[in-house]
Length: 460
Image 1 (tube, rainbow, N blue to C red):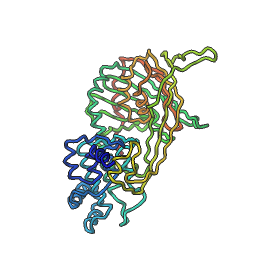
Image 2: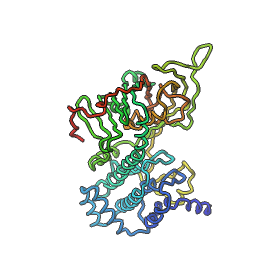
Image 3: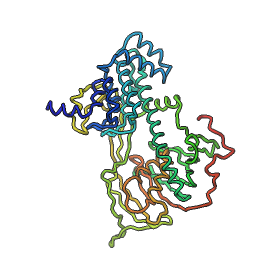
C-alpha cells in the first residue's frame, strides 16, 4: 500500500505542492508542467487551491503577508484599514488561510489556469470558491472576512470573463468568415414553454425570435428577455452583432420600448464585478445540465394498427420525427460552511468519483428528471447544422438560446432539427420550431444600426 501511495503521489506534482502548501516549488514546477492536468477526482490545481487553503510550509509567511496585502488593496481599498489591523496584531488562522490561497490562486491564474473547467462532481473552481465563503458567519474579530467574499471569488470571476473574451476573440475570425460565406437570410424561431405540472403551462411564456442575417451582421428581435427559475422578464429587445466592427462596438442591445441602447462592453468595472460577487455569494450555487451520455434516437411511430415512421410538414419543410431516449436534466444546489481537513496521502489514493471532503462538508441537493421528447429532422431545410451553430454562437448570451445550442451540439440524426423539445428547468420544457426561413438579398442594412432617435442607456 505505501508503494502504491508513493506512485500515486508522484503523478500530480502540482496538486501535491498545493496540498502541502509548497508555494516555492509550485512556482518552479508551474513553468514546465501542465497546469490544466486533472487528478483522479477531475480536480485541476486551481480547484485544489480554492478548495483547501492551508498555510504554506516552505515559503516565508512575511512574504505572503506583504504580497497578499499589496495585491488585495489593489482591488479593494475599502478593506485597507482591516488589513492594517491584521498586520498590527499578527496573523490569525483566517488571515494565514487568505495569504496562502491568495498566493496560489494568483500564481495559477497568472499562468492561464482555466476557471471554467469542471471536476468529476461537475463543479468549476469558481463554484468551489463560492462554496468556501461563509455567507453568514464572521471572523473572530467580528469583521466579515474580505478574502472569502471579495478577493478569491472576484479574482476568479474577473479571470473567467477575460478567458471567455479571449476564447471568443480566438474564434472571431473564423466565425466572421463563416457568416460572410453564408447567404443572407430571415428566420423565425417559435418558443413554446410547457410543464408537466398541472396548470403551470397556462402561465408560461411563448415567444417568436426573429433573426436577420446580412454579411457578418446578425440581428435578433425577441420579447423574452430572461427566463430563470420559473420567473421571466418580458420586453421588446433587439440584439445586434456586427462582426466587421471592432470588438468594443460589435455587440449592441436595443430596448425598443424605452428607445435606449447599450454597447456590450468587453471589460466590466470593479463596481460591476463587486455587484456580481454579492449576487453569487448570496445565492445557492446551482448547476443544471442535460446529461447526453445515454441519449439515443429512434424513429417515432404513428398509426393505431398499421404502424409507420412519423413524417409531417413543419412549416414549409418535410421532416422525419425521432424519439429522444434517455434525456435527463440533472440539477444540483450547494450551500455549505463547515471546515474539514484531510491529508495528501488520503486524497491521492481515493477512488475516482469518491473524493474526500475538502474545505467544507457538503450541504448538497441533487435531483434528476427524465424527459420524453422528440426532434423533427428535415432534409429540405436550407441551413446546415454547422451554419446554425455559428449563428447561435453569436446570440448565446440569452440563456434559453444557449440551451438550444447545447442540444444542437449533440450528434443528431440526419437532417436539420426543425422542431425540438429541450428541458429548460426540471419542470419546464421548451418546444422550438423553425417555422420560417428564406434566403434574401433585400435585407435593410439599417436593421443593424442604432436608430438615430435612441439614446445610450445612462445606467451602463
